[in-house]
Amino acid sequence: MTTMTLEQIAARIPNGCKLAIPKDDSGVSMAATAALVARGVRNLHIVCVPTSGMQTEWLLHSGAIETLETSAITLREFGGAPRFLQAVKTGTIRLLDATCPAVYAGMQASQKGLPFMPLRGILDSDLLDARDDWRVIDNPFGEADPIVAIKAIDPDVTLFHAQAADRFGNVFVGRDRDGLLLAHAARQAFVTVETIVEGNLLDDPARSGAVVPAMYVDGIAHVPQGAWPLGFGDHYPDNADLLATYSAAARDPKACEAWWQDCVAKAPWAALLATADTPA
Image (cartoon, rainbow, N blue to C red; front, side, top):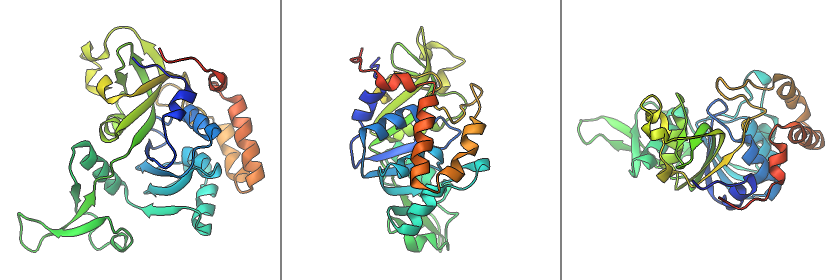
């Protein structure tokens, strides 16, 4: 298994790459995002699979995003997404608007090595006027039956948080299958995990169906509570008190920066940002 520090993962995610990230409840690596922000990453093409929230807000605040491909940016019950709304209003990012099924279709095309994936539900949508990488084509097996071809998204890198990894580099994602899609679709996958387990996860019949094999994983960092302040499945909930204060703070850039500095200082993974161990 290639074990890495957070800084080493951040160093492997280059400026200008197409980076696929999961929705807030599918395992967001906020710890690795902190390392990316600290590194000063720039010109990212972020693909939200299929939505995002706090992670994208942080990357927008830090000036890391050039292009944002998403079906929604939302803080859920904690309110709107101020940095996203400001970026759209001021035109500081290129926004590729999508729908959840369209994002998944583009990712599935990449996962399967296909140039596109057909999708019917957005026919006659005004999104087709805004997306020159989607095409309406004739169904080759029908008559007068148009369908939309969604171009494969083909991420350069994906970054997510998962439940566990074993010593062989296999990663257990659990019942939420988005981690499998992300790792299969991207050229490189970096994962932070709650725990490292003994034995081979692929040998466990109860878990093997929800395991990303090591051949799809390029680096793993052991980061307990790596999704914090977001929640992570049954492991821990959102830090509601902290997240509830974000929406108001984020309306002012200085207050937003102070909020993020306070968030990182309180993070259970904060000490791991200072490590500089070599990979095992």
